[in-house]
Amino acid sequence: MNILLKRRRGCAEDMDGRANRAKETYDKREGMKADRIQYHRQDMPDGQEKLEGRNSVLEALRAGRSINRILVAKGEREGSINQIIALAKQDGVILQEVDRGKLDSLSSTYAHQGVLAFVAAKDYVDVDDILGKAALSGKPPFIVILDEITDAYNLGSILRTADAAGVHGVIIPKRRAIGLTAAVSKASAGAVEYVPVARVTNIVQTIEYFKKNNIWVIGTDSSSEKSYFTSDLTGPIALVIGSEGGGIGRLIRECCDFTVKIPMMGRITSLNAAVAGALVIFEILRQRAYQIKI
Image (cartoon, rainbow, N blue to C red; front, side):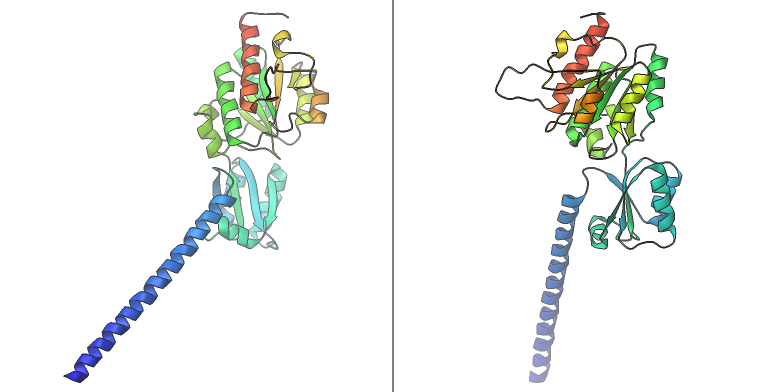
């Protein structure tokens, strides 16, 4: 009898020990999972949908899907990876080589096969599509060009304003700027579905193209001598809005036909890019509506 009791106690202690070890293993896994999720959230481009695996990314490229950026593991140069790289370069998609550990941290499926792609919340259009929309409207072209806007709220808010004011389309650069992400779509309150957005490699070349199409290019610049509400903003216009920190770039500013400023009366010397853009956009709409010539 004593022997049986000892065995039972031994079995119970053994079971308790196994339960404790299982709990420790579970806690450890959950902790690693939490760390991984946190790292993923910190490193994940804001609100972007991603594709994982070679076939998914390759077929998205073949189908002409709008892709913001592709991450490829360093050293991966075998099989379909070469096709992905070739097609991405052909389509002008941004390619970035990263450590495999970076892909592991961003992956949701844990089967990325050395490649991840961040895709746009909505497809981009060509610059000519925007000009075509303007032509069909029967009104002078009204285009907004954004220079290095990196904040999702700013871009989304500008798209919302553009839709409300009847802007024919928005131009954004491929590099050093946010693309059409889920966060941008949310900030736009759905306007991203109605405002065509073209993503270009070179803003300066695009400005020159607009000039050849008899469109006046007007930049917003705090150092300008002209106020936006004392300038003639009627006719075909492409309005350039820069980032909050640096404004529009020097080369872009030099390419503008002229620049306008928003008078500031207080101690703060600049406005949020979306707010500044809204003021000038609606002044253009006002002058058009009342055929004001200044």
